[in-house]
Length: 578
Image 1 (cartoon, helix red, strand yellow):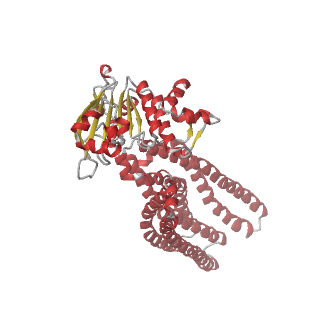
Image 2 (cartoon, rainbow, N blue to C red):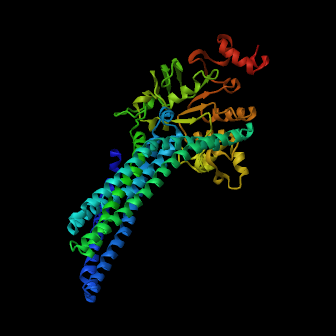
């Protein structure tokens, strides 16, 4: 929580103003019982109407000020809490954008969503309640006790007894509820995870007829959260009647003891009534502080720690302090030099001693069975992970020694899953280069064999794309992703199994158009289909993370059994030339 204090610094003036308003409200509230005792003793009992009117007007004035202060506190306090929460969410989002897959594996997407929403809300609530509780309540408590002692020191023990009983009740509630607050946030993470999986996997759930199973899974997660919340609510609901008993008991005790002292002329009626008001103010102040520390602080502390964990988590991939420049003379050149890679906590290497060179104007293809490390090689080139051993150079510079932004600006990357963002066709195609001309955008769509689909739409490039491209087919999504990479005009293209959802005719036409318009660029194609890479200038065959073959299609059929096995399973003998 201490690390989050910096988010309040921009609102220092507002916080001072809120504290001043609360202090003024407390002074007014402390003065009102004193005026009331004067009206009773100096006006009502003495029969002085003029004194009652003049003192009553003063009471109305201070009551008006006391009622006006909370309006300002709510306005400024709300803006401060909301502004700090906004800054927190902004920084969390910016931090998450810098994370690699390793950080997402550690902190899960569902948990990150909870931390940037529910956890921030808990901190915001504490700020809103805490600003009042940590200024108004202490002033009222201390001031009320002093004023009560001035009225009747002999009844001070009543306040002490009431405060002690109150603190005991709140302490019991805190000990019962506090351990559950951290558990609540973890259960909310789980509920968020189940909800997210159900919504994103709705088609799979329906296809396999597991709706009832998923409903039960969600119901279990929902009930777990409900049970904890009900337990905490039951604790709090039990505490409040106890507090009411303490309040009522204190009032009865003050009246009983005060009436006996008034009968013996040791205290005036007005002072007794003022003492009772001050006693209530003291008890209310202690109750307000206790409730904040029992109900709001523990949960907000847990949420603050979870937020701080995100903000202090360092990405495993960092920009160098002194970045180097790319070599213009080696534009588009990509080299893997003895690259080995092992995922965090993995027992075995995913890639082992991989070396190759991809040159401009040539197509380098990577093929191999599932799990052989093909996509990992692409992830390492994009620097989504850092190599464990060896090095990767792009245009003569080690990818670890240049800025990530500069590296990725040179690469047009099309992932296995063609991810589109909500918006329009145009906003998606121009995502990598917002300044691209409409003519080049249309040409890129034509090369990617998606222009015909766009022309069928009434709004063409202004047609809506829903979240994740759910309103287009898998093949259309892949072609739009390819067009997006083309619009960027990079010197290096990386196609990570980006043609798998295309029919053979579209695949052939698209590859022919790509070859024509990317002749000066370095093209790296990762594929499962031999037909996609048969004409590549260089084919790399991976098996269990090792390079087991290198050459053209014809060479590998003769020299690489692993490649021949893959090719023979997909092509006929005539196509193989055997």
